[in-house]
Image (cartoon, rainbow, N blue to C red; front, side):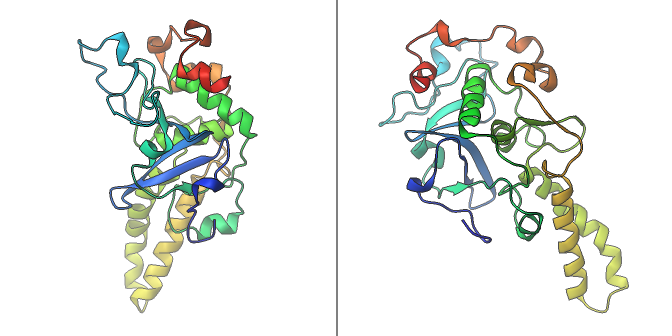
Length: 259
């Protein structure tokens, strides 16, 4: 991995890595946690939750995978999914999210959602969190406050944002908000600067600083939250009163992976 790209080969990723791939011609990225053996846990919007015809057998997603029988496994009413690496990538390239980068490296990254100054927890802790959330869910998907990047970053760090009204942990969401904001704030400067290069430089600086200010490694409104306390902090309510345990089905993919 370098300053310009975090692209890696499959043989370079390790257990507990935060991986991602780009969708829709680099319009956005999708994130997950690598479990080893070509399996990934990731978070996406729930499907068919309001359908009265959904049965208990629908714990497997509608996608078909010819190579991995348990690909698409999820608990009912949950957006956390187990997939094989091929289905997760969907023919896209593989990238690895960086943790514990220096402040200068973070600011030098042009695109958000690729790194953080926050340190990662040990890989076994990361995998344990991912498997717990595969069992119990990660609340309701929200593109700005609780998305796939937020899920992966929680698995890696255990950190949550206290301020429910602001942007979540996602650097991708921060970039979407930060870029237009920087352009708006810097627009009056075009009357004070002699050329467009100066305005562009200031705008870029404001954009980088807005990303930096929302990074979980420097924010002051983040706390370490145990998995058992997520329901309270994410406001899950009664949707997760009945949590599934590993003892409920010894043949489930969850149990098989952790063996």
